[in-house]
Length: 298
Image (cartoon, rainbow, N blue to C red; front, top):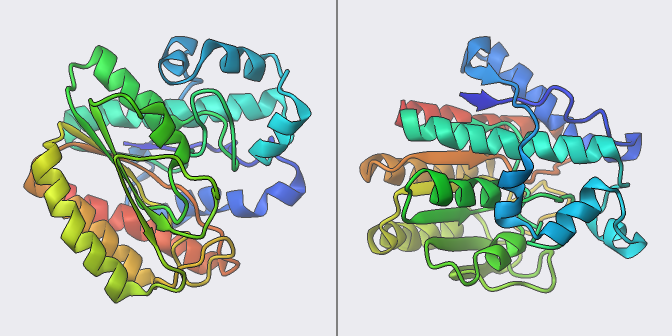
């Protein structure tokens, strides 16, 4: 099942909508290409507060829902604060939680949005207010008897919020491979961080990943994987500094899903970042993640 958010864009002002419209287009593209049927999608309800509070502090959540963040805190998120925005964040988090529960049943689940990895336990940042995969991971640990989780974050930006939330939780191993000189400029400490140099292309990037991922699966021995598949590693991305091709992104996804298949580990995927001005390329790269995942895991 794939979490879909048909109102994802609408709470945002027009000048914020361009990077978000990809989520509506991705839904249309998956259907147009026959990757999935409409019945593969579900629309989540807003996530419950009890789940939010597993990953976020009560004080931070109170400020969010009462719209009482300070001006500087609002500026840090990158979005104007509104009740509709909070609703949107709760829908995204619910989509990831529900798709992770589906992964427990079927082996895989996708959120057509999500990947809000800059949100920490008590802050929002970089277009992220609630950390969807952190909330879902905490829920699986608390209620589903999952003992060990591996979070694979291959967005071009470090998953700083995720790293902070799980800093002292040895049940979750956080791995972030990201642009060394990309936002956030103050990095948090993941269990494993690999900051790569500007301009890195497919071959070197994939070689690093090939040396790293199999050891993680073997040594961490996870019972569940969360995968953040940001395509802001593309050479055409406006916010990234790497130079991967669409084929490089596809091979990256193949590597992750093949290991999940090999080790028989359920995996939930959130789409993460992608800000290329070539919208067709951006949507195609995200669409490939679904194609590759379904072809390997189904």
